Image 1 (cartoon, rainbow, N blue to C red):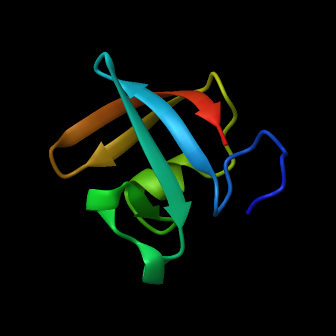
Image 2 (cartoon, rainbow, N blue to C red):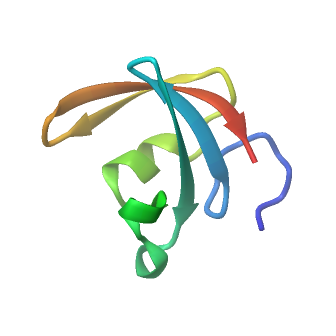
Length: 76
């Protein structure tokens, strides 16, 4: 469990909004990654983009399907 710093770190659960839809991701190590269950690796494009960010920030993530914008709504 990460410290309550208000900054996304490994172990954080992040509530984001993208394209008008809310999504929840937990940032985990590469061994624990399970994208279907919402667990994204800290080494993935999505995980790397969220690390070190704060609530309210907008994050652009480069994906194979094109760039996606995410707004961080909550960090747990």
